[in-house]
Length: 327
Image 1 (cartoon, rainbow, N blue to C red):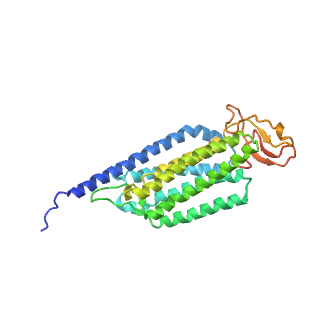
Image 2: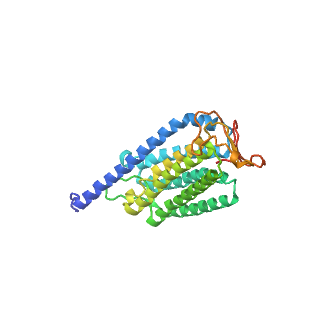
Image 3: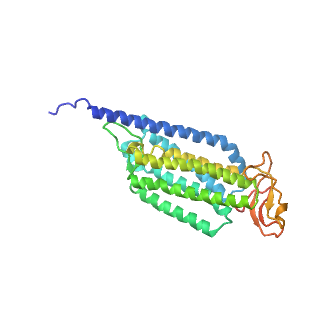
């Protein structure tokens, strides 16, 4: 007859305590970010109703709705996966079937956000085929790397018998790093393209509140998402397997928040302004500072190219509900 198991060793007790501590850290960080995600949704719901649902639907509207509401569904499930150590809602067998939910959601949400950001840059460059090709090539390479990574991930193992860990996916460090380096590349390229075009307009004395919003939102988006993706890479290199993906849900939530605000901010009412180069460049009147939008001016917007000899350049037309060139 086998003797009853003795008390756990000091190493087992330490592993048990560390596993519980890691699980609590993942739960607190993810649930806390989900609360911010929900708060942002309800705070911006009135703007969404006015600027999305009450306007004519375009492909940008569709991208916004997919990004926002798929994100809500995605993270409602992620919360159940993350809080497994507390709720015991997900069994080990079930986790083996759905542990890829989070990385697959990361692929979809990242793609939607990048299409929104890339569409702005594409329109800012006058729907340039070269720009579309560059951004499209990066996104295809990113998609391939993400799909390959999905085939290599596996559920996070328990650090010790009896320790229930969140149902998250981990995998080979090199592939996980590549998974998050590619979004860094795309974000950097789109930001540099926006910065270049903004400097070009500034040198040509093209003044527009729309350009101000484009640069401001692009800078904020780049700083926030670049920082989060860089943090993911650092975590994958330095942390234990259990904690490597701790920042993944927060990164995706912030990505959705920022990309949705890109759309809402650009659709905010503003006054019509016509700017461009005249035959006498000295007569160009700079009514608006380049990086500040005029406050409290009711307007919708439309950005289109003009070929008029009197005002070649850019025309921002008031009282429109559709965008011919979305930037």
